[in-house]
Structure formats: structure tokens, C-alpha cells
Image 1 (cartoon, helix red, strand yellow):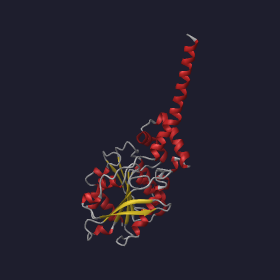
Image 2 (cartoon, rainbow, N blue to C red):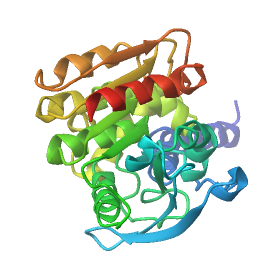
Image 3 (tube, rainbow, N blue to C red):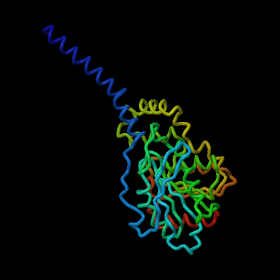
Length: 306
């Protein structure tokens, strides 16, 4: 082999090795990290007026100065018994209040509840933050702001406020309630129990890259960014502090979050709390609402709890 050809091949091999190393250890993990921290905002593709709902666009402030956006919806029948109950509705990691309205709005509205749908930080119409999505840690501040706003509305019975959420939102309201216990009851659909287990399953879905090659590097970058580990983002570790009625719902065909964690969370809840568990047969991640008795089951839980 000619010397110049040998040098050329060695040079190409070195460049390929360096570029491949950058790709595996830096570029793709960085893309995955940014994708998970700042998922694209979901557009407001549906509004309460599309369902004939009377509502107000509201802006309310968090303790760290963010201006969040929400829809405050009047009950369908203001003389119905349920109209004295307000349900605050929170979305998951990649969704928004529009998605929640589309999937849950009519079900709750037709039962005559007052409703408050809002976008947490980094989602929907609410602003982005430098820290980005924190899997429920900073989002607790958003729930606190939503509860405070709701409690101070003249038409609201402050003793009959319910929190409802799915997926990351469900984990968030579990964290929130473990700290405050200041609402009448919570309904958590499709939460995870332990953050380190959750992220291993969620990473390929959220980033589009395989865990085996890129996941651990990306998660290490995220944990450095946050200043805490995903093991710290575990509702099951704080659930014992929840003393109010708590309804855990999870589809037993969920492939994004292991459905067995529903039992884990339920067992971890304080034994003084009313804590029914519904494992919904044949439903995947946040698909339980497709059950014909989904909203009536929730209504029964609320009625028996407050």
C-alpha cells in the first residue's frame, strides 16, 4: 500500500472515530437532553367555547414570578349539587390545557362541575423557563398558584376543590399534596412511582433515541442540569404524607409507565386516607378515560370523599 494512501485511510479512520465519539457522547445526548427539557409547545387547537362552555381566560402568578395561562369554566348547570365543587385539571409532560379539555372537558362539564384548566410552565400558552421541564418538582409551584387562584374566586367553595391530573401532572399533584394537603381530594391517573424507573422507560419515547446507547449519558447530563437525581423524583417516597382522599387510576396495558406502580403508590399512601385504586383493564397510558364509566366512577369517588 502506498504511503499516501495509508496516511489517508488512517486520517479518515481517526476523523470517523472522533466524530462517532462526539455523536455518541456529546451531540446526540445533548439533543436528547434539550428535547426532554423543552418539548415543543402544543397549539391551542380547541377552546371551551367549542363545547358551548361559559369561561374566562385567566392569567395567574407563581411564587417565582411566572405568568401562567388558564381557562376558568362555569358549571353547565349552576343549580346542580356538583356546581359547588371545582376541579383543577393538569396535563402531562408534553400536553396542554387544550389536550386535557379535548379528552376530559365534556366528561366533567356534563357532570356540572366548575372547572379550571391551566398550562404549567414550559407548556401550552404558559412561558418557558431556563431550567425547563422538571418532572413535577418546579411544577408544584404551578399547582400551588392554581390552587391559590381558585381558592380566592368568590363563586368557589374553597373546601371543595379537587385536583385531577394525568401522567407527569399526576406525579406533580402527588408531590404537591404530600407537601400541602390543602384540597379536598386528588385523582392521579397514570403517575409513575419512582423517577429512575420512569425515565428509563420514558427516555426512548421522549427523545427518540435508544436507552442502551444514549440514555445513561443523557440522563447524567439532565441530573447535572437539575442538581438532583431522577431517583429523587419519586411520588412513592412521599406518598405517606398524603392524608386526603386519593384516587389512583392506571391502565393495565400501559407500556410507557409500568402499571404495577399504581399498587406501589397506593400502598405507600397514608392509611388514614381514603385511597381507592382502579386498574383499568386493557387500557394503555392515559387511556383510562375511554372507559364508559370513567367519569361516573370519579364522580362516585368525589361524592363519597367530600
